[in-house]
Length: 479
View 1 (cartoon, helix red, strand yellow):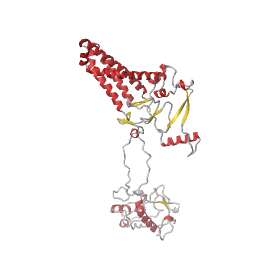
View 2: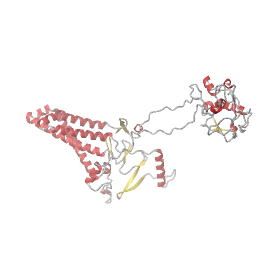
View 3: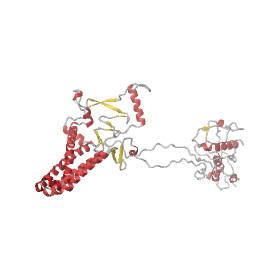
View 4: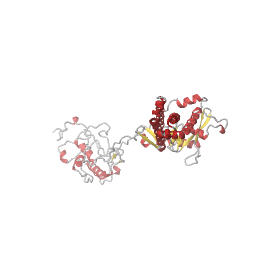
């Protein structure tokens, strides 16, 4: 038999490739039970910290309290439906077919702007991450001149100059940010909203920078629709009363009475609200600023609105025709998973060697790099005081199998880790100088000193296996 050929027909030494211990055996005791299961990626709206409700996979965003919004929908749908069903046929025949056409256009415009206002992001500002919040806290400590554990002044504000007017930026303790100018925190939605106007329960959402124009168009078009329905319902009743009398007209069209009552009590508030917001747009103010009197002359002669362009037409164009800013919260984006921790393999180790004997020795002494290192001084083995002798002159023999392996309950796992003696009879074992070493391993002839450490198994259940394995290696080294 040639020196480089074993019983298994491995072939010449130069033709042998690096062998790898099989770690895919189902009965191997080294199999790691801690395998991460792949989970479907989650979107940001699923973990959104504010008090909001999302629909259609995050495309629709509303406040949590939406009961009044459904009341708004019912009032508009019922009133308009009764008008189109009971009044429009008579009016289109007696007056003109344009009446139901104009009413239909107003109705669809009202519904479109209402849903656009209710289902959109009003301009929610993203909350600070823990790192950003900690960094901001350090900046506040430095600005206030306080050290750790010292007294921190309660007010947290910054001052900026906008068009010559000093504007204070307040710190939000919930979102951990300094709110930009004109932003405010909504207590119902628990969000900071950019250019916050107010929280409107009738639309079921906050009104801010990104949906204010749609809110204004909604209340303005609803005012026209309410006046339109009310006027033509009265016209319908008057025309019928001229033919059959007033009481008979009411009996013939009872739905007109209900429509007239609803429109009469709602038209005043709707028209008044439209007029109020028309004033706000013309002066480039928000409801929040107007209620607080932020730019009132009562605060001083030098107090003025720094956001006004000084022209009514320009202010209206800026509020209604300006570019629509994008959403800052990216509610439909995917949550970026944490950086995976690359743990060392717990079910074996890839060993490189040219002969079966070297793979067997590696199997008898499984070493990993995920645990603290152990030197020969830390091994409490009797009869052996050091492992610092050079290994280049040792002739490798058959390793001694461990005497006790409590966790090896399967014959397959045992044969995977420690081959039987009969499998190696007739092998020609090579010295480390003759065996080719792959890149990254110690060259042949290098002494193994105390500075070269060995790593033990990462699983606590394999401690006894490791001790017996190392004891076999020590016995082998002492030959």
